[in-house]
Image (cartoon, rainbow, N blue to C red; front, side, top):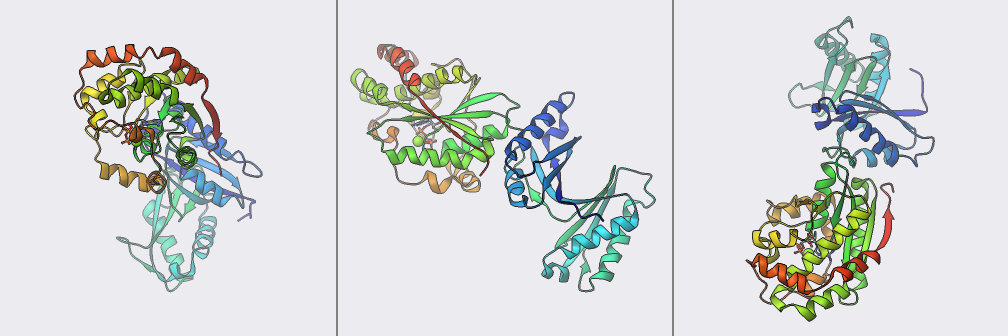
Length: 396
Ligand code: ATP
Ligand code: MG
């Protein structure tokens, strides 16, 4: 086989493959997202294919970067470094030997099996014959190997398509749909455990997110802001790059404190955040808001509270954690790598200004009156105006 300066990866997708007429739209998004994230790879990459499978060509030496990108790109379910050969048995055999020889030596004393598939039925061997032939070949070449068809330690995959593709390696992608296929959204990101997970989940359904953080300096420290920035950096690979908007929220907070009874402060604060997020969303052409709310988790997340806080915006508000337990959210936060940062002990403004006895089942009309009495619209517009934007790239 020709030694090539490139590595090839076979990429498999999940839900995209189930799409009907508009599948090509999702496929084009995925190709675009991968290309964009690998823009920095020296020598450049190319990606071709569709129908559930893509072929990525990347320069040798970029393996770590490619793996990092493919394992964080929504739409991908798995990927494999692959060898491609002509559909001739001697070429295929040579590639099979080469792949096995490149394994960690200890794996050559373990169990394996060969899985063959052919979509090209004109290939002279059927799948079973091809798998047996390659299995025998590897047993001859590496006598410490043994076959186990039920629970093998590793699998040599062979696919006979327009060419022959062979791979052993299998990396997991995060699943979901390509970022951007559902348009843009605005994530309300605090420094807590929940909202980073909410952002991850909505990006997984195809939203291209910006994040907004409401900063109540000096009541919340610079460290609180740093923590949010760290979280944005951790999410950026999944979100395909993200703009963070930091909104100076102290004047709004003060207005609430002056004009509203203590038990209403948390709800009014949330409503102000929603409204500012909506103003920013309009500027960023985002068509939805995302929060980390979960039903009944705290007083501001009861059905009555959510009705009010959501009523100040006309945009749909996505709350992907609404039906999850805290334990389930924590498990996800650990998996995506945000948990350790989220639990760093910096006060958030909600905790600082939280009343001792918040309303649990607020009266809708009374809250709408209180919100009107704040006469805060120009304050909210000004806060949005003063938002500071910074961009976090998806790549390292
Ligand atoms: P989180 O863990 O995300 O902070 P939480 O369980 O602490 O959530 P709350 O503090 O009540 O819940 O906040 C509910 C939601 O409101 C958050 O998930 C987030 O989307 C939004 N939010 C709260 N505080 C802020 C803030 N300072 N900046 C941006 N969004 C915020
Ligand atoms: Mg919080």
